[in-house]
Length: 59
Ligand SMILES: [Zn+2]
Image 1 (tube, helix red, strand yellow):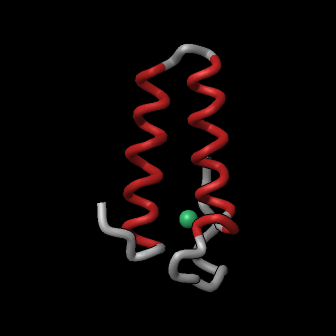
Image 2: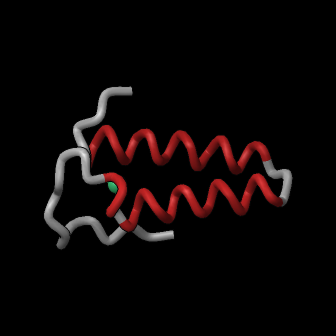
Image 3: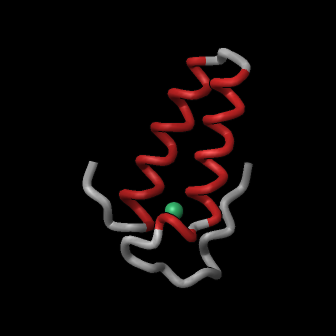
């Protein structure tokens, strides 16, 4: 999985339209559908880190 966030403008509180956020959501949903809780947890951690870095969101 790669995040192409370097060329996209950063919009504060723009998580709804953020490709990376959507990919994390999708990856977590897939992991959960496969009952892979450890991977789902990884997705949540990565998404939280991404939001803190790209959307200035506090954990
Ligand atoms: Zn995002």
